[in-house]
Length: 448
Image (cartoon, rainbow, N blue to C red; front, side, top):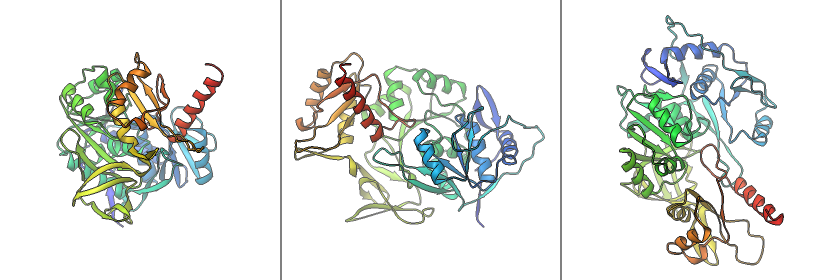
């Protein structure tokens, strides 16, 4: 049986996590994992809902030690958890404090029992063990489940670190604005540090001042793992962030102009990570310098009349890209957008991603998205836009759009809102946008 260690390099006294200003070492962590593993019930699957990043990792590692699989639900909405209860009835939940979850027995992670003399062994996990079951975001439909082996998580983390030039001797600390319950958050804020002997901040800062404070709580060098939405917020707020070695961005396309602003404002380098739930992270690029994506080591690309696919030693079979891509070289590709991203309005074809990028580049726009409602009639369906632009009038934004997009794609109507219903990873699901549209229509009917 082939195994891979829970850690890459291991140094008992090296800091693994920073929690409320306190350092937690790798040996301390192993003690916490051993104590929790002894308490876990005999069940095959666990839903880890712990918000604290360090305590989540304790639960995740303890489940691995017990041979269990962690489910990463697409959301914490009652409907999503109810579906998990139907599909994975023999499960339990790990929770914060005394929280109880309907349908599942719930367990708290106990307080630390670490002793300075602790000499716990480093767990060895079978590489073919299904470590997690991740779910697609539901941005274009119902969430679908995908199992990830421990070997695949380890390989992706090591390849990503190698691509970024990370070395085990570098005492780097990661601060992440993204949740660890999502594949990007798990890979970049959990797996990346433990496979490279790094540390991470246990919290999840959301607002620019929170990001600044979290970065200031940990020593340099630092890496900020985030999204375009958070980058824009920090740039717009004029944040003076402590120095960061890199900024890693994913979950949505990052405009080159925004990446350039971030690099200038924060004196750093901004890298994008591309991936999707079925394959995990698979390519990177430095946004200001290149349009093409460079796949991680070991990944091969294939293109035929049906589209583009990829293969990797840790994947059981080739996986098709959910996006429209074209291969430019053996290990490079260009991303053109999702297949579902293309729209046809009155015979004019366009890309929602391209429209969204142009919308968000307009001065004063803090957040915005184009949306194509369901076509229910014989007339031409028109695009709608939801926009966050404090102090700006709709006509100001429409006037700016007229200079950069086809008139057929001008949104009718354009709704100005205080915020958009983004989920924990910054994504907008079709369901949430349909709900928002329904609320606006209801308000119009009642004159509000």
